[in-house]
Length: 337
Picture 1 (tube, rainbow, N blue to C red):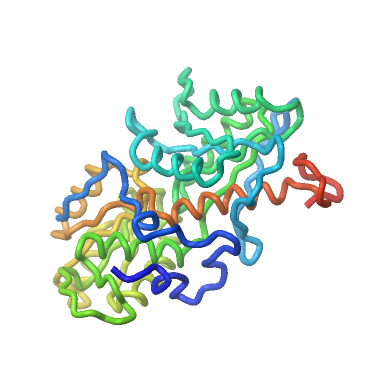
Picture 2: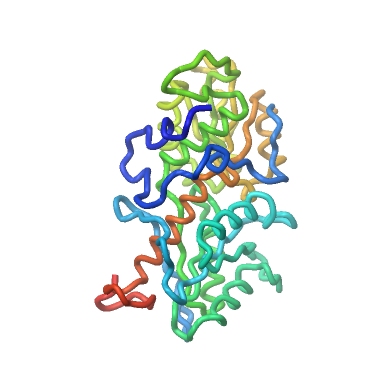
């Protein structure tokens, strides 16, 4: 397998790489496999109820996690949507482990997005309350990063409501607009499954079993729109037609398959553009079987996913940090960033 430098930033999109946050030390680290539970076979304010502040990455201001965290830095909460009993294990646990190893000073928590308001100690409200209780009154207590790679409105809405209900001084970071890194990670997953060439630069004579790709998303039409950009970049990497489709909205997987077949594609591969817990593994497998497609694994704890979560946290932290070399983290306002 070729080194990752041959894949990195191949699309030419600015902002695909983050200064100061290099590739993992080796190929195994960069291509972490998802944990168990995924299909692997082929076929606010402290005193009031203010709304959560959404901080979305953008353009050249996107930054990775700082090399050293300031004292009292907010916790990073990975908010996992639609997670069942094992939703905080598998890929979520692997991502959390890597982030903790890479950032020993980071207070990292994982939480289920609690749509039903249950008294769950691993639910987002309980985790927010605990993070706030461990920090001075009025200080930013947490950055909540929904563990998704495409827009997922229901999850963001639930996180906003949880922050408002808890009264925590917490902020939301997201990992959207990251198409080049996602295209690279999806390429790796397809290559791991023998569904795409592993080396698009040297074009080794590697037999693959797909001549058209469907990117499967969850989260509705907005997620498909975001994934369509990733699909365009992946198509450029593979020199194959790539379509984005949804497991829970239109255009459906069947719609995308029909469009590919209309283009003359006879061998279709399904690439789940999800980390894992946000999508039902059975639904992914069923969608692949319905259209006669082979399927690679979800993104899981791929090195690019870890990088994107780090960048989402780091950007929020950077906006919360006041000017000056000795400044401590405090809420935004006035001359602060």
